[in-house]
Image (cartoon, rainbow, N blue to C red; front, side, top):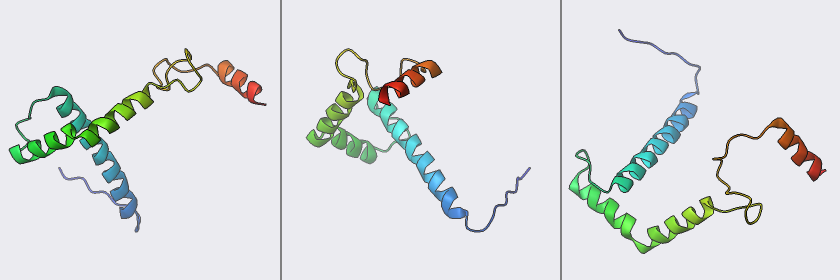
Length: 104
């Protein structure tokens, strides 16, 4: 069974942009898990694997990775305020309101 889709003229650019963003995220995630595992998947050629390994072992890559790791663990509110990552759950509307009152 074939599905047919239609859309207005000129939307192809938006679709291509969305598609590219989605594919870039999938590729980034793929590289993360391959790098984390450390073994070459069967679908990756030796040539590509060698290029990835050269990139990941380069000093420039290592420096950027260390900076990114440090940035993810920063505490923007000062020491002992918690990291900038959103891992502690959502805040209640009361907490948001209290922050707004403090800013005013």
